[in-house]
Image (cartoon, one colour):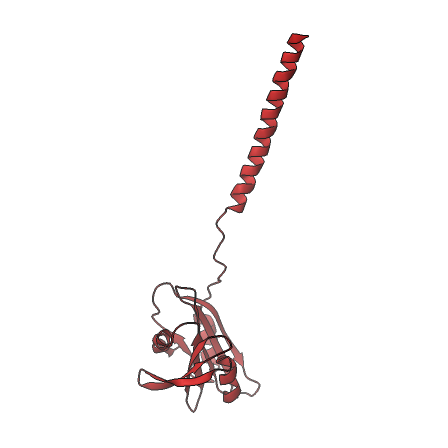
Length: 178
């Protein structure tokens, strides 16, 4: 009987080791799946195509930033025709290297409503001169975003974001016709 007990004890230990090994492999598999690096949730877009479409609408001179420093990512670009023929809205959004949002939006109709919407009901906060053009600064108490607004006879351009006025001005200085 003593011999049978010893054999049974060895089988129990062996079964325990096998079971623990199977569980350990399963846990290791789950661990590897959970710790996989996740891709950047920001989808980078190509601005050239939508900018060309917007420019071909011949509504106004579409502006895009040129020569942004390394690390800036375009996250959206779209042109939406206005309700009236020959009108439209251009939107182009970016994230800077610190993942702060900056966008340029242009529209040639409903200017007052457009400025209120794009500045998040911002209040005038002085002016800044960028490349010889005077932009009106706006600050939103609701969202904390800042905006620069330039209105000409053809189009109103709004540069807005979660960055400082200085960085908005630097971004505005990179805007060139598409």
